[in-house]
Image (cartoon, rainbow, N blue to C red; front, side):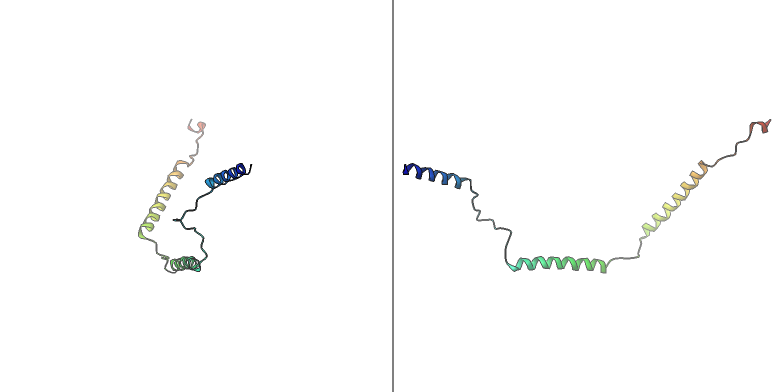
Length: 102
């Protein structure tokens, strides 16, 4: 009876260890407790802030390109021509009475 119990116990242990995840020795975990990586994260945050400030500082302002100016002029001329055409299409002509011609 003891022998059968020991064999059953060994079988259960063998089965549970077969389905347990095996440790991987070549891959390290992503969580570390060193302060060096925290420093790197802070450095990256500071760099982002510096870059954002420099983008604002050296931003080009107030200069519109010649191409944009010419496109604005052309679009306003085209819009004015279209408005004149629509106005001509929808002008009403007074209807003469039929009795006035006789």
